[in-house]
Picture 1 (tube, rainbow, N blue to C red):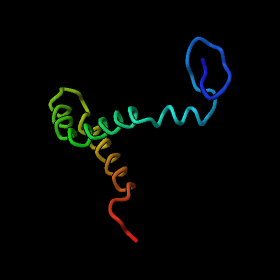
Picture 2: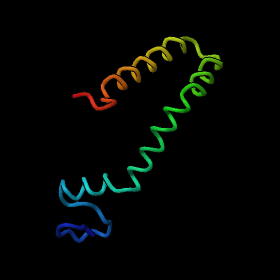
Picture 3: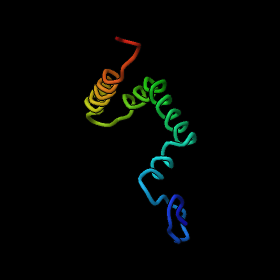
Length: 83
């Protein structure tokens, strides 16, 4: 069954782009994304320590790439009220 449109399939799914956006930006999905981002942000030192302990060759390079990627993301996010 489709909502915000006419579709008679037994599965409930969005029929339009706006219905898909309302499906993705509901409070439950936003809370799960915020929880995952917070977990990675505050848990990254623990995750990095575990990755460094694992006997995987070349993990230092992967760790530096991932750390650089997150540093780039943090520079793109505007923090504070600059005018």
